[in-house]
Structures are given as C-alpha cells and as structure tokens.
Length: 196
Figure 1 (cartoon, rainbow, N blue to C red):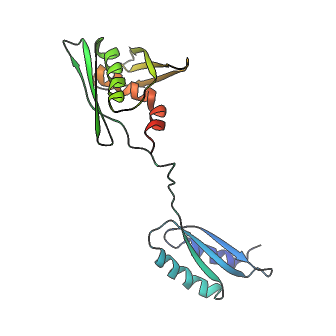
Figure 2: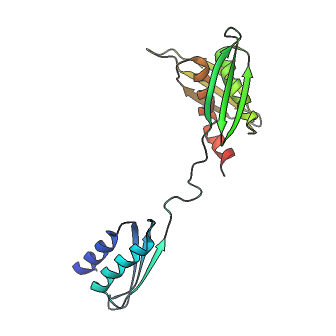
C-alpha cells in the first residue's frame, strides 16, 4: 500500500501540465527506481524539468522518462464532412438541384419529381458526382406533419441486399430537408467511404 508521501508524489507528478498518466516502477522495498510520465502536451522538455524537480525531492536516484502520447488516434479522427452548398427547386417546382462540397471538390446533382423525391435523388447524384460510390436506391421521401414543422423522412434501400437506411431532417424548405435527410440516412456509410 502506498504511503501518504507516495500519494503526494504521484499527485504532484499528475499536476504537471500535459501529464495524463504516470507509471512508477518500484523495488521490493517500495522505493521508486523508474518513473514514466505520459505527456499529451507539446512542451516535453518542460515536463521533464518539472518531473525531475519533483523526483529529486522524493526519489533522487530514480530514472525519469517522458513518453509523448497523442490523445487522438488516427482512427478516431473524423473525415472531412460533406457539406450542402446549395439545394434549390427548378422548373416551376418540378425538380431539384443540389450542390455538395467535400475536401475541396464539388458535386452537382439534378433530378425531377418535385422537391422531396427530386431533392433526395439530386443529393445521391451529387454524391456520385463527387466520385463516391452510393449503392442505394431511393424508396421514399415523405414530409411528416408535426405541430409546427414538416420534417422529411427519406428511406433508401441497398442495391446489393434488402437493407434499408432511413434519415430525417428539417430545414427551411423541402429540397434542403430532403437533401439533409438523405445525407442523414447515408451518414455512417459515407464516413466509411471518405475515411483517410
């Protein structure tokens, strides 16, 4: 069991800015002979100087190592988001045009069939224009009446299986709502496609 001074020693080490963890190796008598500071900060030299000062007070013979770490792994970094730049109705409300942006590229999609079906289909076409594979078919795009809004629900079906994806969104107009609901439905699938 650690003594009060050992607890103070570890607390002082953990109070160093950037230190997110420590490892202490002890001999049979409980005396620390090696300490590793896991440093998520950017000033590793400062961490080493402060750590050495604390170590000199408690265990002057102990070896000190500073191990730089990153709190964000490569896998957990989010890929660039797909952004709706424009979603408009055209030809007397008979169709929709959607422009998407992703990593500096632009994709444009146009479709007839009104603002809901057209907005959803135009979004799928804009994704394909960005060079993304979208193996889904539009099954439905429906506005749902609520007390003070009309969110749009989009249902897509996989071309390879009978799996369905559903998205829901509410925006100022139906084309925007349909575009956002389509991206909502495809969200996880698209993240796997655009990951670095």
